[in-house]
Length: 440
Image 1: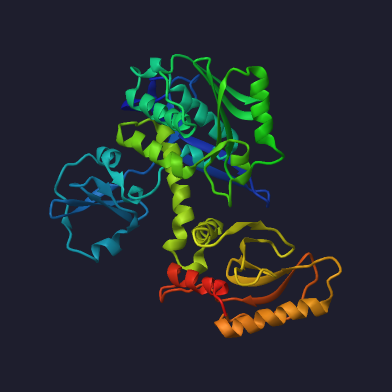
Image 2 (image 1 turned 135 degrees about the horizontal axis):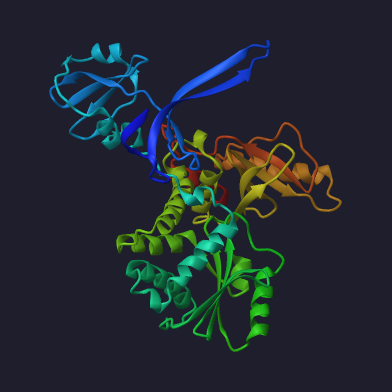
C-alpha cells in the first residue's frame, strides 16, 4: 500500500506500508512470530523501514481548549491546544473521571497535532550535553584548542560573538601574566607537545602553555619540564604558562612555584557567561558552559542540601569553605574500608597533634614518632581529653588505639551543626571547630 504524501527521509522515494514479520524458535521447540506494520522505502537499495505506531482518535474535548486522544490500548493523552503541550498517557477512564468532558465535534488532523505538540515531560529537563560523555582531559584539550583558534582576527567577521569570547579567554591568559593583549595576526596550536597538553604560539612571539587537568593534579615536576622543553625550542618566546583546572584541589603551591597561573573554573565561568550574554549560540560552546555550571553547582550543593545527602563534590565544597577560616588542606584519603574525603589542620593551641575531619567525623590525630611508646600516646590523649572537657569540645577516646604512622586518639561524630531541616549551619560549625584554637 502506497502512502500518499509520505516520502523517505533518507532518499526521498515514495514510502509504502507493509507487514514486517520475524520468526524465532522458542525453548520448547515452537515458533514465535512477531508481526508489525511498517513504513518501507519503495527503493529497495535504501533500506529505510519504520514501525507504524497506532494513531489515536480524538473522542472528547474540554472547553474548546483541550482534546482527549484515545489509543487502541485504552490509554488516553490530553492535548492542550493553547500551549501545544501533550501530557503523559493515563487510562482514559481515569481522565474522564477527573473533569467534565464532552463529545468531540471538531475536525483536527491527529498526526499534525502530535507532530507540533511538545511533550510535557520535556519541560525543565536538561538537554543531552556533549561534555557529559566527552569527560576526558583529551576532550577538554580539544575544546580549548577550538576556542583559542577562534581568537584569530580573521574569524571576527565569521562569528563575531564567538571570536570575542575566544579573545576574552586569550586576554585573561595575557593579563594574568601582566602582558598586554596583541592583535592576533597568526596563531599556531599544537597538542601534546613534549607531553604538554596545549601549546599555542601567538604572532611568533608568545608561547601559551596550557597544562589541562580535570580531576587529577600535577606531579613529578611536569610543569617545569614543559617550560624547559618550550624554552629549548625557542628561547626568545615569551612564555605564558597556564595550569587549567575545572575541578578543585586543596592548594596550588607546586603550580605557582613552577610559575604557572592556576586558571580555575571560577575564572572560566565569567568568560563563558559573558560569551553567552553577548550572543554566542554555538552548541559546543554552550554545552561546555553548561558542564562547568553543573560542576559548580555540585561543589556548592553543601549549602542547599541536607548533610546526609552530601556526595564527594559537596564535601570538597565544604572543605574549601573551611579553608577560608583554617590553615588546612584537604584531599582523598584511601584506606581498606573504602576511603573518604578529609580535611586536616593543626590546632593553634597545641601542636603535639593535628585535627582531621573524616567527612562526618572529627578525629584528633597523633603522628607516631619512631620509638614512641604507649605511655607517650596516653599522655597526649589525656591532655586532649582534658582540653575537651575545659572547652566543651565533646570528643571521646576511641574504642581502641590502632597502631600506624598516624593514630586517632580522640574523636567526635557530631561536630557539624545543622538546622532543623538537616542543612549545615556554616557559622555555627566553624565556631565549633574554632574552639580548638581558643586558649584554655
